[in-house]
Image 1: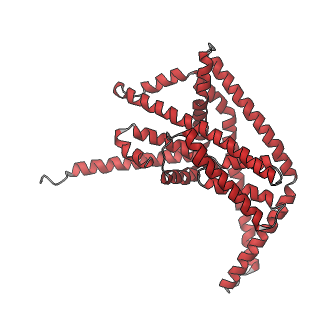
Image 2: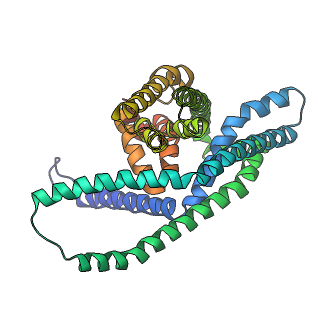
Image 3: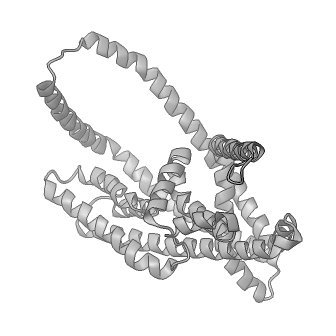
Length: 356
């Protein structure tokens, strides 16, 4: 065998390693998909624990035991969420009472659009379809659609039940037993790598904490600005629509366009001309763009360091895996992956690509 030839055993060994990595990645992806409720609950608990940890450390410096400080912060978090949920529920219930008015307008708008589409189809194609067959197909397809929606609703309720039930306890235990968990995590790795793991965890803590704090403030700014704009133009339910706009702002890039939909739905009952809708779209886009490009960099800083392509791919992938919650968690997950890649020698090229 010449010096330039590769031994067959090495080729087989490398191919085997690659196949095992692909299989492992597929198994992990399937676990994330089918155990979405458990994984999302765990990830949200970790993010909330990172977010509340500075307040617990402050209470600990004020001579309050860490366990008691963790309990106080979890109770405050629950109180804030309950108060916010109650306020949102009352506004949503009020909107639900008036839903027939909006549903009628929405059906009229949808019917007009559908009529124009059918007119275009009729001009393009002269192929006639049998109305009876179409109607029968619709009847046959309806049970399948309803069944799918029911199953999706059960899955969402199950995930919501897990989050409401287990998340407060997980956050409390993570905060109260932070040092034990930190030490136990380091013990999972060989002594030669513990310093590297410790630096990775510290960097990961700073990145996630800065991102959560910054995005929380940016979301509140967008909610306040959008609600004020809706109130000034005299639109109904300005606070409810502003909250929807702020929550959608957490989704990078496409959130600015998604925020149009709730506002357009409310505006359909009051305005019919195109100018008002153009004004709403332009103002919401301006608020989102200013918040993301001016406010967020000052608060979040450059710790996240993800390029636009990486963010877009992350949104597509995690949105496909977990739906709406995947869009919210896509950036923290990708930022955590970038931190791990930066501290792992063989993965550093991936980290450089993510932050390029």
